[in-house]
Image (tube, rainbow, N blue to C red; front, top):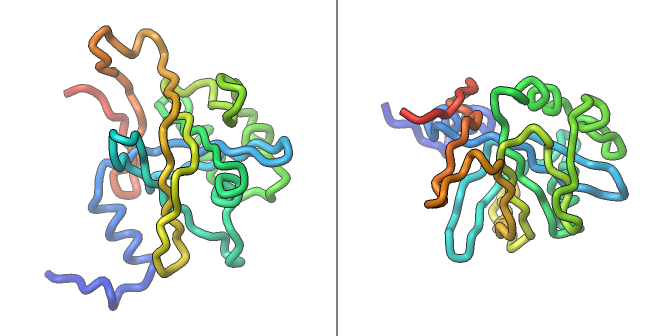
Length: 187
């Protein structure tokens, strides 16, 4: 079967792509504006380059066409903290997927503990084994309602016991495999 993407509506294109490109990491993108911490789960991001160290994340718009809080906050403050989900915080991640008003924080509403690890960046989710502290690098202009942003990794937090002396990391992050969550472990 050959599927012609030009003739497939947005929601079905999303389903096809997200069920094909697997596994996709899932993490909170934590941003902050006027003291409100926004912690939104994303699975549409991936490494882009190691020199410079960058990732690309695609952020859609709200149903009313306005920018999602994560997008607005990154464009305004040029900072984001990406906190990877694991089996211990998966329930919190699922709860935080509920859309809240801009002035309401997912971390407060759902009692998700955070920790300000670096003063110049939004706080990280305390239960995350690793987090990436990123600066806005650029925006990719494409037609449609999704805005791809390139974020540059400036710092990474990782639990001491999860990295060895050769910089190999052992994590049990959650990933999306289509519409399902999977724990990524060593084989």
